[in-house]
Length: 284
Ligand code: GLY
Image 1 (spheres, rainbow, N blue to C red):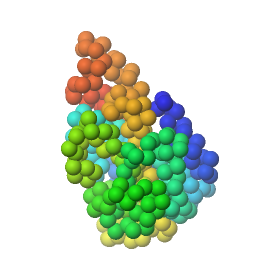
Image 2 (cartoon, rainbow, N blue to C red):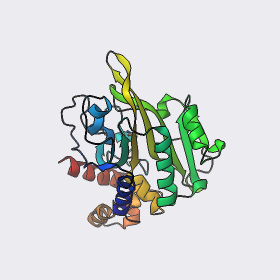
Image 3 (cartoon, rainbow, N blue to C red):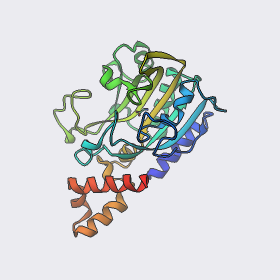
Image 4 (spheres, helix red, strand yellow):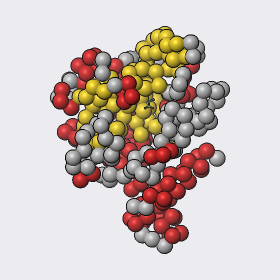
C-alpha cells in the first residue's frame, strides 16, 4: 500500500464517520507564541479545545505536517540513529471537540487498524495511563489483559508543551519481531525499534497554564498516527527510510555518493541528510 493510500484511507474512514477534513496548518504556528514549530495535529485546534474558539464542526480529521526539532517534543538527537524518528513528519489525526470521548476513540482506532489496515491483532500491544481503569476496560473488549500495559506520565500523559491542553493517553504499538531485538525488555523499558508506537489517542481533559492546571470545558479527543511509521508497517519494512516516502531521496543521495540504495539507507549520516532535506524543504 502506498503512503498516499494510507493517508487517503485514514481521512476517508473518519469523513465517513462525520468528521470534517481540515487541511494541514503551516509548520510555523499562527498566533501561538508557546511553540516555534507545529509539533502535533492538535496545535491548530488549541483554542477550540480550550473553548475559546467555536468551529462549525465538533469532529475533525487531518494530515498535519509536523516538526519536532526543539521544545517539549524534540526528536532531533534520535534522527538517523533509529529507524522511526524524524524532525519532519506527517501526523494523521482525528479530533473530537466535546463530542465523543474514550469509548468511541478506542473503537474507531481498533476498527481502523485491524479492519482497514489489516494489522495482525497478535502483533499489537496497548498502553494506558497508570490510573486509567476506564481505558483499560474499554481495550479489554479487543485485547487480552496481558497485552494492555499501564505506564506512568512519562509515557502516557500527553501535553503539547510546557503549557496548553493535555491529558492521559493510550498508545497502540506493533511488535516488529525478534529479529530486531530478541531479548528486548519491552515497551516502556527499551527504546529500540522492535515495538513501535503507531498511534497515540489523547483523552484531552486539562489545560496547563503558568497559573496551574484546570479542566477543559469539555472532555475531548486528539489523536496522532505517524504516517511514516504506518507506511513502513503496511509496506512490510522495519524502517521508515525504506518506504516510498523516502525512496526518491535515497535514490538521489545514493547516486551522488556512488553507492547502492541499500548501502546508503544503512548509513546513519545519509539518513540524517534524507530527514533534514525533507524538513528544510517543508520549512521553506
Ligand atoms: N497529540 C498527540 C501526539 O502528538 O501524539
